[in-house]
Length: 189
Image 1 (cartoon, rainbow, N blue to C red):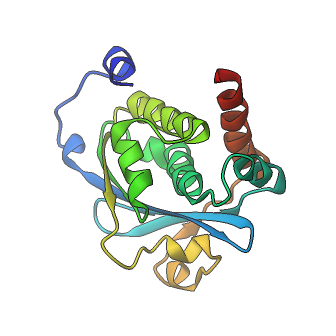
Image 2 (cartoon, rainbow, N blue to C red; image 1 turned 60 degrees about the horizontal axis):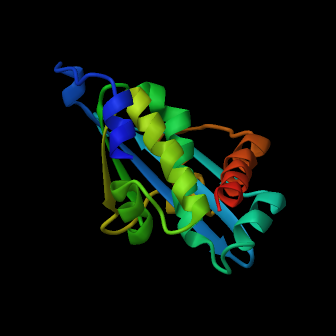
């Protein structure tokens, strides 16, 4: 992973823009056999600008459940990859702090590898995007009160009061992120 980063990363640019820090909060949940996720984008100025929410399709959940009885690890990684796709263009060559509330997922992103083949591929895709965008990413655990818990449980009142716009995701595209990762992971064995 480090070799790829060195070979493909944009040169580091020094500018006032590079000193700005955006904040992205993500959450995954696994309750009653269903996987859900959410993400919240907070600007460098502290404004809550955007959020997304979704439920993992049955086919994608079946894929996750084929390798884990409780796939919370992968469900915590998925919204980070989604956030990179959705908000990455807002954070080119900029510092970004990604807040997660799952320590193993946070460590996997820092380390650049996961504990399962699906996690490895989700992380590899995230790192590749981070590299292409020239982001200076920092992964941290939310100390308390993760605002992304709201959209991952389809509660939008607080985010709407804060003026955040909902980004509507294509369910098939989200499923493809999981299914492609699972398929590739099986092929690699």
